[in-house]
Length: 207
Ligand code: TMP
Image (cartoon, rainbow, N blue to C red; front, side, top):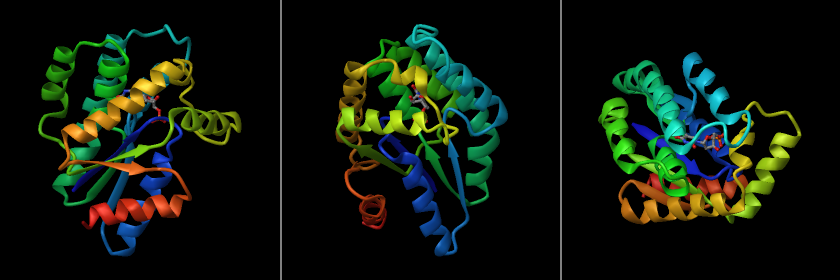
């Protein structure tokens, strides 16, 4: 089973990936956790190119191409082999992030996005997508303090530099996506303690 987490920076995705994996493992399931862009050495190298440097370093179309190059390597080498082996794969971001960040908040071409999905993700589609939702400004200040303490390997400074209007569009884009795909996407209120958010996710997964 393929499960993805989506949402803006600072919404607590990585914590929820970890908590869900622990809970499923406690039930005896074999779980692989991974992230995008990343998940293979080559995809992590592309991630470094995407998240560092000046905000104008890449256009939205260029970001789309780099994210999908990373995704191709990740799907082929990690996600598909784990699913074929009947493992549960939990991925921090996937195709929906490309749609929302590059095509909704950015100005990348939707036709290019659709073609890249067909070519590089194929029929690897999540069964459940949990979209973590909190007010964009609160999320950004959480992300900034996470990056400020230097303890996390997940710095995403280039995206944080895109500004509040961009991140507001990201939040709206994810909310609209949840409405458009009600069977797959579940919008989760990500306010409150991590354990409470985890309980909301668990209820949806078992609902
Ligand atoms: P993260 O640590 O929050 O996942 O940071 C990765 C950044 O990359 C985040 O700002 C969202 C962005 N991103 C895209 O713009 N498009 C994509 O397809 C993916 C997977 C991530």
